[in-house]
Image 1 (cartoon, one colour):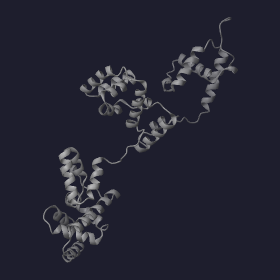
Image 2 (cartoon, one colour; image 1 turned 90 degrees about the vertical axis):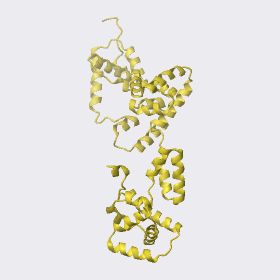
Image 3 (cartoon, one colour; image 1 turned 180 degrees about the horizontal axis):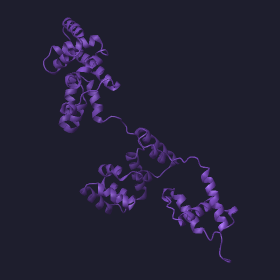
Image 4 (cartoon, one colour; image 1 turned 180 degrees about the vertical axis):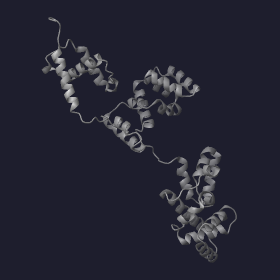
Length: 346
């Protein structure tokens, strides 16, 4: 072996050179190492170190292997090593809002490439991008993905969408690198939890909650306009609205006593008195409440309703809104659950 280049004495070997020796030893023995999980810089450094290896004498190799084994034996616990890895290990154990906030913090402090964050999504999780973005943006996404994952994603979208994305590839050749970087940042913020949603509730729920506390005339006018403008959205708002007239269909008979103690007696008398003097849904709501409380309480309320006299419409609406608010509060507290239309259909 005289004249052949040999590795430097083990006392002068760097840690990266020793790591390359261990990797080469494991690969020689058929080990399957997930080297692609390493950061790109570490993969490149390891490759260069492997390329620089010459002949290694037995004593040096055994010494490096023993040192590696000793250090490995001293490890009592391995940790995820990054925020993203930690989030994956905690999948399903922490809330989605916490995941989003932590990803946002990590992206802001680590300077991680937004495209790397996007490409961490599964093919199924990328479908909303193909649905919500232009074909050109979807084509750029596919171009950034490994071929196998791009093919998987393309196979998950409808055929016509897939054809539009494929054709859009022809219009992406002249896009500047800075524009692609901005697109990556936008996708990461929109689809990867790098920014928290502005509202926790749907638009239908938000406007429904507002209309619940609005005068009946305002509520009817707004709902009529929404139905004319966008029937699907209007129907969603209508389902989110809960008014005094909805009580018989939405409030279970057994839940009536649970909400009465949280309603001011004067409001209850005015709400029932005004409703009982009408025909239709309001009167039915008053009957539903009176029929499902104790007989003694119902008799006392009917007596007070007869003594209250004429009730102004504004006072009646305010009292009925107070009753609805008490029911809503009980729902939010988990004391009761409103009946939904699906339950009725079942």
